[in-house]
Length: 154
Image (cartoon, rainbow, N blue to C red; front, side):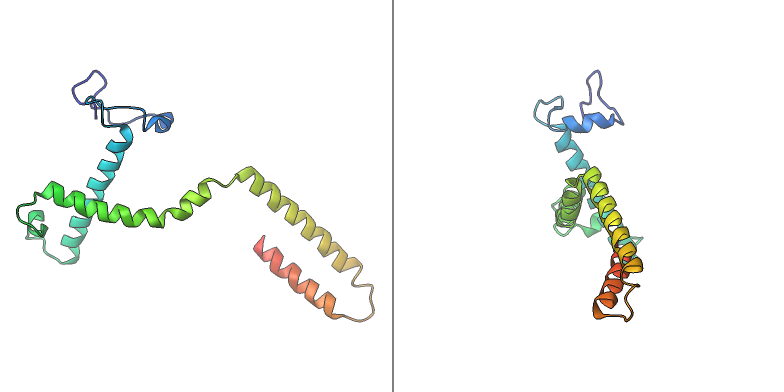
């Protein structure tokens, strides 16, 4: 990206640049860094798919071009098409990542800490108050089961 410019041909970027993915433009003024990153991922996944196909079919004596369904289609375009298929499948797999990204870790930590504190109080109640009873009641059995299960979950 930006090949032929003063800063062109860079092989890396700072992490804060990720915030500017859609703002940083290429030398053509149209291609953003986001476009470039997506194109490179698609191309890379396509090449990997062709290599995996070649390896899985033990066709090491064939050229990658042999996997092109339409002979008029060049290899780069074929790799991009394969990569696009791989990436489009991946986007549905990444829905959980998107959901996890919006979780407030501090709030989650606070909630788990409060749950653990409450469980400690319930355990103390069960050990002190419920043990003073002469006979085991169904509530005590259910409470003990709840404590064990919740302790494992937390």
